[in-house]
Image (tube, rainbow, N blue to C red):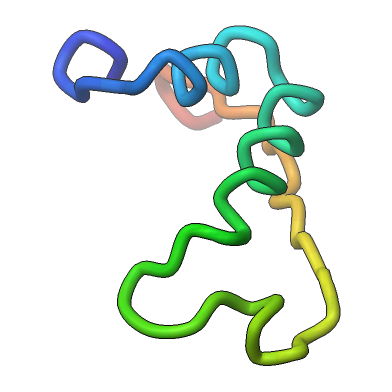
Length: 62
């Protein structure tokens, strides 16, 4: 994925450094509106949903 998806330095750190860098990136992006007001401007509570990491095994199913 890293080879085919260009990432910013912060995004690359989130991939390489894990959860701590991801939380820092999400906190910084909270005030970056995609189109319209930010969640903070709307008065929404800060909530981050962390997706679980699921083990993936490749190969034949037994």
